[in-house]
Length: 591
Image 1 (cartoon, helix red, strand yellow):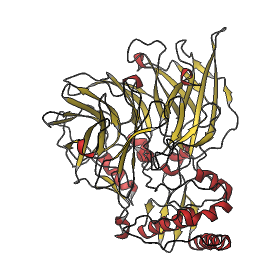
Image 2: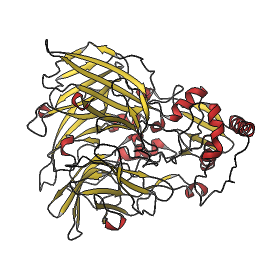
Image 3: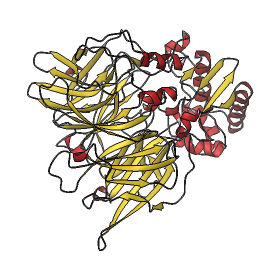
Image 4: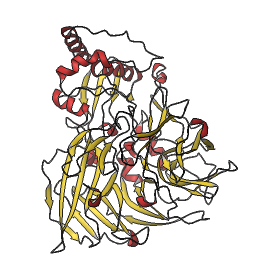
């Protein structure tokens, strides 16, 4: 079984105009931004430009109505979940003096930075009302960046290392800070009537159904740096101070959710993005110029459902699109069903489209129904396109009403079998294998096979120079199934894996770097060595936390001597909660 954690952004908020940062201005904006969650489902009356006093009174009445009907309560954490608890900002960057081992001389100067969930007001909240209960899930905490700065004194050859953290100040973050209390009703998990009413009341009060989180990833494009969660636009970040500089809408050309995993196309440097939306158009794809100044291509791919697609792939000529049966559907709420649902009998397909193509130019390949959140890489091989990703037969989203039963069942072994089998081993429904799909663009043939079996693997990374090109190595985080089960499905990663990809191998070679007992990682990324010769010339760096000592560290692991002890272990001055994706930004990318 795999615990891919609730790290994958599934928020289905609808894009709204930027909101004011203070409540007074917010009240005056309601009439201009009010839209129903679905025009086909709910028809709110058109709101005319009422006098200011009427708007303010309406806002106060709605707020009072929410306060009367809904009680916000804290979600308690189990002892095994202690490092999922939020931390405070430390303020200024702090120098780190405790380093065991040695930072290599050919390690690049730069910033290792990781994004993650760090809820305001002490932790995640639930609400109780006559309509039932709804709860925020861990992926809904406000984004916080944790950064390690590596600079080297040229004369002495010594390293200076600093640590800092800071919330990403989205529009809704600033609004809730101003309110000094939670405002948004949870609108993803819980009883359908409570979720439906949360959608309506959040929309009426704030002009949007969910918070803008910006907690999933951080990426660079044209020497600018962005924090992202796919329910909103990216926020530009000052990489040195971690200050939030504002939303990036590509000069007004992109006004919808933005994937957490944009990809730079090999050769050209253009940025390929996509955005999902729970109302038509369900899936749009965009291509941003290499200088980041304009949208050079934007197209509706004509999906007939809102697939919860978290990642996108690129090759030298193509974009690779996933359409799998984990979907978001507002209509289900009216039937008393879940907003997010995985249909194991639904269709699954992978699309390959020319870089600047349209819906009609996509060549679709039907594959076995499964759940894939992350791709490792895609590349062309003569007439074929090879796609590698982390694949499970079922989805851990949405969380079941009885979490423990579902998670425990997976450990006991599943009776379900897969049509993809290796060495006659049965495939458990929540266990994430690395899968390889080979798609023949000439004949339409599909070959799919699992190439790993030993561990459940997620959060993949490669040497970024090989994105869209044939690569020999991939690196992933190893799920600790037992620890994740004890944490009731909040995933914990007890090691790292290095995969050796070779042609015509049924099962690929894998090396493992396992952590001490009670130590888990997040945000691992590959750092390329200065003047590297080989693809694996470099290191995997990751934040770790030892739950026995309550100490957070950064491991630096030599990718060529992967199973050996870290070449350096950096002890941090404060606790770093588990998070999502990390990246390394070399100083030569800076200004």
